[in-house]
Length: 168
Image 1 (cartoon, helix red, strand yellow):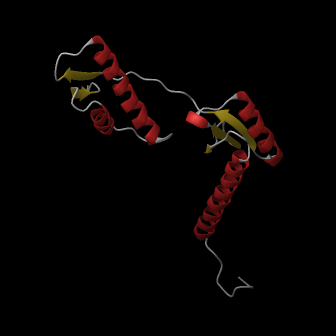
Image 2 (cartoon, helix red, strand yellow; image 1 turned 180 degrees about the vertical axis):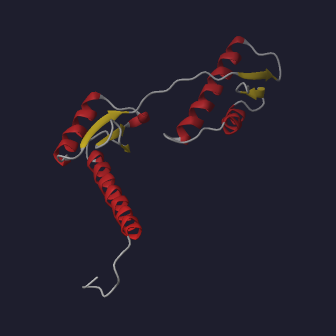
Image 3 (cartoon, rainbow, N blue to C red; image 1 turned 90 degrees about the horizontal axis):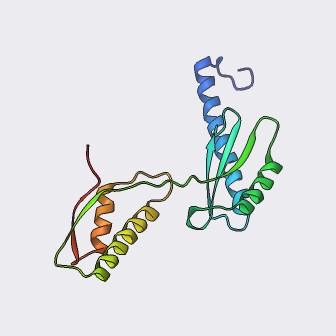
């Protein structure tokens, strides 16, 4: 207060200013981790997760083509992260977790289908779902209604999608 001419700052105001500064520091550090990981061949994107293994740890989820990563890419990113690591933080390169699930749906063919047409229909449904989930990206919320619209675009004229998912 002697330098600025202002009265003493209240604890509450100081804590607020400090928390704003901390968020800025964390954000810039996360950007640094992201940019360092992108320098490794095969890395297309990352997700930074503070506290991945507890306090003081940061998980850098490494994403390559098809949102996959391999051991060589993870080793390359980890080598870069180790160079940035200080005594108060542990940076770890991790691969994305693959998630599989089953979806129940009802399709009604508009006409009798041959065995080959049934196979083609199944491939079109799979392609529609795969396209939808890829377009959503990692960390987003999926909508079965939007997925159903994507499937309808792929199976136009061959079958009607009467339900997707099994509401409970």
